[in-house]
Amino acid sequence: MPAWPPSPAVATHDPFEEQDQVAAMITAGRRALEEGEFRLADQLLRRALVLSPSNPETLGALGEARFELARYQEALLYAQRAARLAPRTARYHILVGDASLRLGLEADAAASYARAEVLQPDDATVRARMDRLQQILPRRRTGAQPPPARRAIEVNDPYAGDRL
Image (cartoon, rainbow, N blue to C red; front, side, top):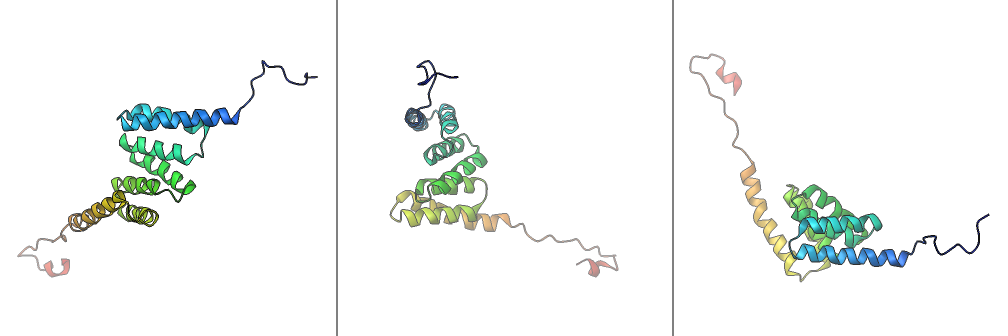
């Protein structure tokens, strides 16, 4: 029968210590992002995610790191999770929009930017993203449409009119 109280040699789980570790890793990851050390930021934030998989701050920062590493699909997934967990945080919606735009999902980007604009109507970052999207959309609509294919009509072909 085990002795009670447990001996001090037995490791105990301290949730406050774990929260402090996650906060420190997020801070270090954000600092690495600011300094352009995207791989280091990615490593730190992935460690924080293991300890706290439902932390929107970790998910958002990891999404930013993946975006900077040009891993847009992963950035989108992390940003979407962060936005679901913290729907009133505009920067997560902006990141969803940025990643969506890089993946060619203009409608999703527009919806995410619109959500961010509702949350922070006076934010210059949101306004700049909306303006950039408005400039991109007309070019993609006109540039993405190839001219209609035309078939050559042979002069001596009696059935040429049937192929039009």
